[in-house]
Image (cartoon, rainbow, N blue to C red; front, side, top):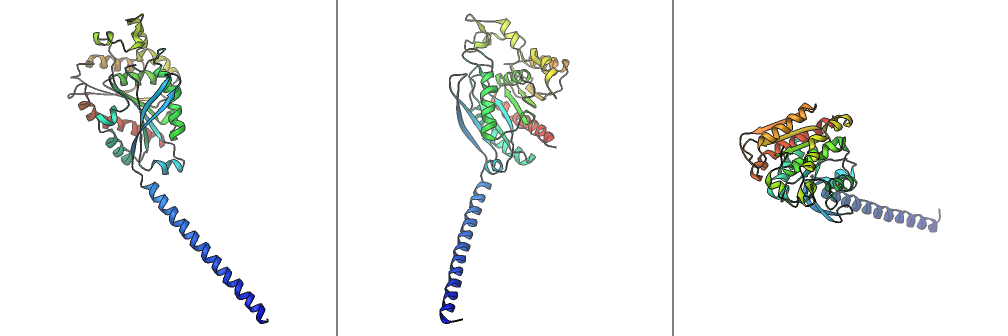
Length: 311
């Protein structure tokens, strides 16, 4: 081999070494950045987000809050289908109630860790509608046709077998009604101090904002009775496979919805063949002080059912 050939070979080897060094350095940098990105995703804490969607049914921008569990983005990227809970507020409330008037985020954080079940919780606003359908406030349709599909698509939530609906006071009424009117859409129902009066109170009858029970400007007992959640149970049982797990809790000292009304509600459900986990408390009343004490057990009930569905 002459000197010229040797020089060419040396140049080629040098070039290969330089290129190899560059590739190695670039790869190391890429891996370093990827590791940092992965660490950032892994470390993401739980959070509560303010969200809204334009509702063509309500004809307005509709607000709701969403609780996202820790490491949500990483789990979503890995293909996780999340269990979900829809929690409905009471009268004079809105989408902020559960996350500002109770320790809901703290309760959920503990349960996600305890059950290793990353659950998404949605808190919609619904005015004083009692989650009924009227021409101007079709909240039942909006929840079923707009909100749930939006949440399912956006947050990658699971289907009805790992979807719960719950609420307190007006929201407890709404949760029961939506559950029984929409078989197989929810596997768990949570009703806390549910506003299930056998006879509407004078306060409710005089409330002009509850349009679903008014006809020609006046309260209608016929509409009120026709809307009761218990009216839909028999039809529900013919279609639900299987029926949802039900949890009801109230205080015997509740003066807003006296316990006799809740007792009768639960009695009717059981007479129709439903299994109800019913807790009557010897403390509390009809307030956030009381609900903040019972929410952990209610949320846990939903997590337990989701855990069974996974097994």
